[in-house]
Image (tube, rainbow, N blue to C red; front, side, top):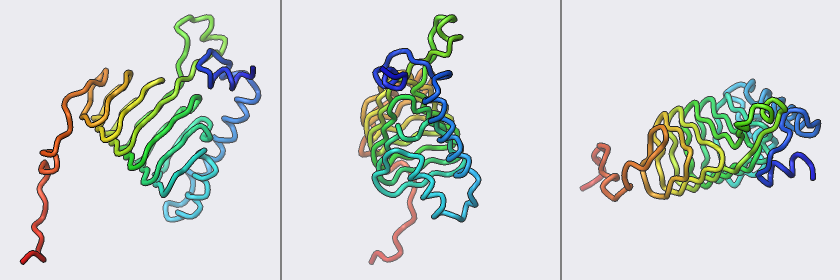
Length: 201
């Protein structure tokens, strides 16, 4: 079994000294460097690079530089995916996003974990557990999603949250550690003021 296969099985693996894994990270880092140094107006080049970095893109997406990931090919994003500045995805295990996912600045999605045992940690061993995000999810600024977490659809994760456990669908959740605050209801459609419709009779 290769070190990469160990990682995908959720077992300890050599993330720091295995030649194939190091080479894959270097290749992705070079592509991210190219993406992050594009002119903001050069959207065609940005889109080309994103399709070389990210393993699966199911529709139109917008990624605002800078953007960082470890491997890229272990990331899957749905349509209408958006990240603001400085999104980091550590995709040692699979990271999957549904449709209409919005990510505010400075968010981290980390599948990577280090052993508690110092000897294993110093030997370069790591573990990776998948992250799954449903559709219609909004992440506030400075959210950190930790290994093995699943977040349901139609959920809002408040700014500054550290998500270390599964979060269900249809809720507002926030905090460190992140906890459900309340359900999202029909009344939330009336939360913000809207301009009157001048075309109404």
